[in-house]
Image (cartoon, rainbow, N blue to C red; front, side, top):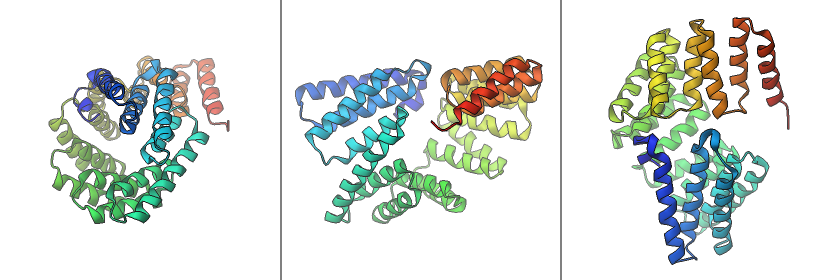
Length: 320
């Protein structure tokens, strides 16, 4: 998955190759729990990245693999976490929660047997994240880092937990440490740049996004995020350039929506509507996109279409 960020256009082929290799492993050993879990993760990733053409068949295959792993080893936390994530991707939150809770139970037992088990703390932190229990996630990441303070990925994960708890200084400290350990971590620069952007420290944000792009010229997220900084700064030409570059690498909804906001600010309503529509085609259940496209229609004077979009946004926010 990390390699796929170097070449997003080849992401599907990389995942397909992983699935093929894991399938061969399963043919050789049909009792390989690890292979079933990893193949389930690959199917879930394929579903997540397949955009508007995503098919339920991929999630069904992921579910089958996670269930097979659980049948072979009912105490395997990775399988429960994977199945919980698959349910989340499928939009079935009520079925995801029990999976994460079961993973927490098994991991708690593992930690009780071995309080030095770093991986168990990291996995339980992920399960707590799935449950939305950020404080417990943070506690487990603290324990994991106490046991292994030189793992940049764990520090990056803890920075996210701090950020979600609005502990911005702590989040940045963790990213600073992660970057000292791994100066080439494109993801860490991108995350820290996003935190700086949200704190209105645009110069620092641009510096981090510039570094991320220098390290990986195909890292579309950094282009999109840098474009959002330029939008906030009112530099619309550079914002359009960055959003367009992100889309050219591999389209994703936030890049289309960001460029749509630029066009809206420029009163180029047709271009704005085109980009919002492209974002909605990839993410049809996000109310804010309909609100913003409705605004573009309203400003253009197409009030009936604006009203339709506002109605859709309202319906999407109703309890189901």
